[in-house]
Image (cartoon, rainbow, N blue to C red; front, side, top):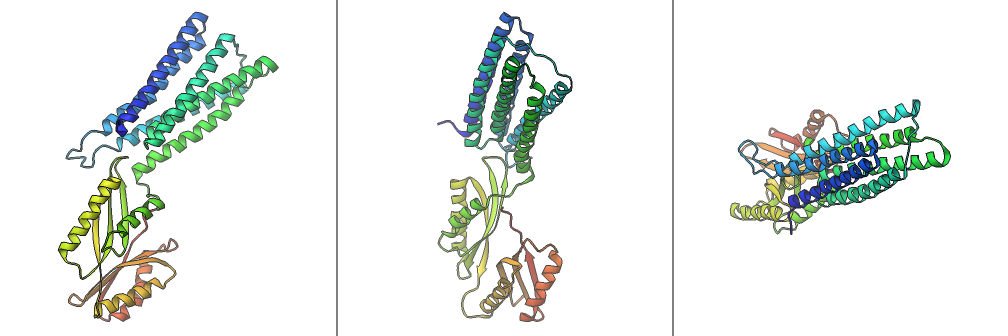
Length: 368
């Protein structure tokens, strides 16, 4: 079975071949019929193949091995490919809108022949089939570039369909709808182009992972023997194939360093094999036994967990030798002033450990 990149490249080649064949068909018909419009439309189909070419180039570049300056590889180049294609779609929509508005105020009377209508119908069928196929493959292989390329083909089909509808109305009712239909479709294309830009741009900026995926990872890690809580999950996307992440786990303070090492190693290997995530696993120790640390842990955690403006409490640390206590909290989204919030929490915890240094670490939720 072909790998993801090979599937994307193969799908893009199908797009190129389909557009070239369609362009050839239009060119032959245009020459035989002596229609400059059909010949120009054939040239337009050749330019449509550019989206597939961009996808192929971007996919191949994204497969370059990591180097010293780019240790996480070049997977994000795929997002640039998707952005370029989305900009092409957006530009086409804006150009179409300008031309359509001109036709509204300065309508022209188009002439349609049987040959022209047959070419238009063939183009619609080919573009719809091609667009649906490429877009479906893009969704299957999580390729924004393929999705954008497929959408581009579908928009071409919609524009051509509008031309066919306009021709039918013109022939039956002698009314030209070219400008109005073109303007409406252009607005839809512009909106879609903006939405197509959003996905790859968000990936480059660093979008949050879905809540469902976060819960899945937390559940899988929690199932490991010796894990008593999963916190601070963060994932960075370096392309569809590479993710770098980190999380913390709770373990009992009775575990040896050797046992903790074994546990974290198992988790990291599982994450690579199951999700292709390079995961760093940190450790929080849960105080056990009948001692001052366990007593304080219980009191501090209960005090903070009782507050309505705190979503989660974890990472408790206490050292009598260092005269130091710290704990991590995840505040509610309603909390905006972290400094004031921390001072308020310190004032509640400080009486439990008079004279000690108390640190409250504010964590944030990096999932949806």
